[in-house]
Amino acid sequence: MTASAPAVVVVGDLMTDVTVHTREQVIARGSDTAATIVIGDGGAGGNVAAGLGWWGVTAGLVTRVGDDAAGRAAVRRVEQTGARVHAQVDATVATGTVIALIDGAGDRTMLTDRGANRRLAVDGLADHWFRDGGHLHLSGYMLFERPARVAAIEALRRAATAGMTISVDPASWSPLQAFGAEQFLAHTATADLCLPNADEARVLTGLDDPTAAARHLGARYGSAVVTCGADGAVWSDGDVVRRQPADAVEAVDTTGAGDTFTARYLAALVAGATHADALALAVRSATGVVGGSGARW
Image (tube, rainbow, N blue to C red; front, side, top):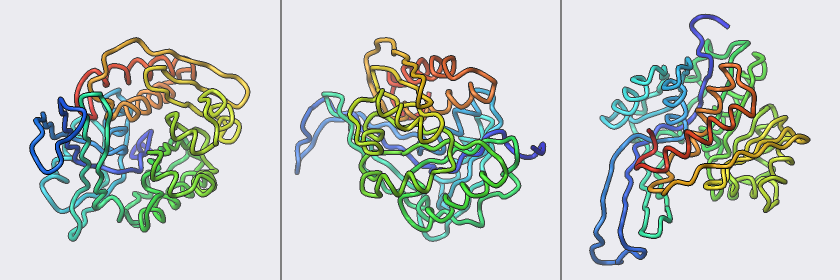
């Protein structure tokens, strides 16, 4: 791998997060509901790249933002973690924004405008970053819409051709279900690590039990980790199964916990950790995130 190529290339979305905490379990439609609103950085790709940079891994993010203050600020804040950003700038579509509504019961609802992310183009893939010995991490969001899907598939092809290891995050159960499990599995067949949460694993496998789903996906990809919220996570290679419980914590905001898990897990693997050690580190880091507000620590 050349000196100019990051150890981990992340292809994914960069967003502005607007997190809305209400004290009520039901929003008063047509009237006012008291809330605390926090604006921060988000996007699965941005979160993972920032996390990798935070934990000392040379990371590069391939993404697309609008020609606006939000996009410039989002890029700058990822770079402040030590990660490098190769951002296409879209002159016609704004930087993506997601609104996370968290009610008094702790339930989270996401309202998403992916903005410029859906227009990621092949010519922005930073070809010199795809080198033997590196790792590609793909956010599944990039597969759900064209033309970003074309760029995502090309990134997977280039990584496989270069001899890179590859991980994929299925992103979110609802768009994953709409996209189709078989289509997702076919497009990501060259990956050797899949990192779904329990709901996404259920969509991909049809199995309700996270351990069974991890074993199924591990056999398909070579390795899979299913995150299970307060119950920790489970890893499998299709044969061996390892479970890692999570410490008890009062959850304030689960936004970004999965991305934190992924970043810490990949950072540990790049540093030479075993899957068991990486699993323990990742669960601990994700647990720390849910105790605060926002997608990043």
